[in-house]
Length: 277
Image (cartoon, rainbow, N blue to C red; front, top):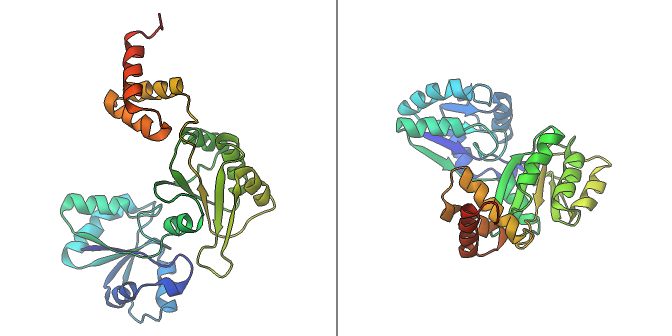
């Protein structure tokens, strides 16, 4: 089988007993960076030296079939540099290929930067969305944020230290200066820090420079920030994109707080009379 194994995101003490046992018995390990895996083995005192295969964003498509075939004969342990494979890390393509080939996939759960940041952010945790790394270019970043402007769920982003100030400023411009957020830095490490506040204040704080691994958590939009006519327009846009009217109304209702039934009826009326006459 293929075993997806979560590795520490900072503190080596978070390595589970199951992870260590799997490393001690593994014959084949597919690793995002084989050098990082070698350092992990040494740091955890694991004497076993399994066969290491590189599995990263640039070779996953080509390497997945080989690893799937290996997994038919013996277990293959899959590791990313930190956290759970497939979550903003290599592994999704491999899992999809294994599922298609009928090869069993399981996981050794463990540390997750996404869930850790969400838990300590002080923002709602009942519903959330993970958006991964933000786009590098400002235009693409702003466009991505505009599509999320009315998202009511808490949003979790990864960001590089060199771009965090610009990203927070762009978030403030789109989501609003006062939108609540948290920047989580160096989670589980010695210099762990969680800075909470409105986006505008966080952008000012980050302008002086920020170091370390970062996760940004942003509160969702208030339910009634979207005017009803605009919500109806959103429903019709989804319908034009191929979504059933009933499903589109339900989706927009979930994000705006407007009645699904009223959105459905208004969208029907606007479709029947698009010029408003």
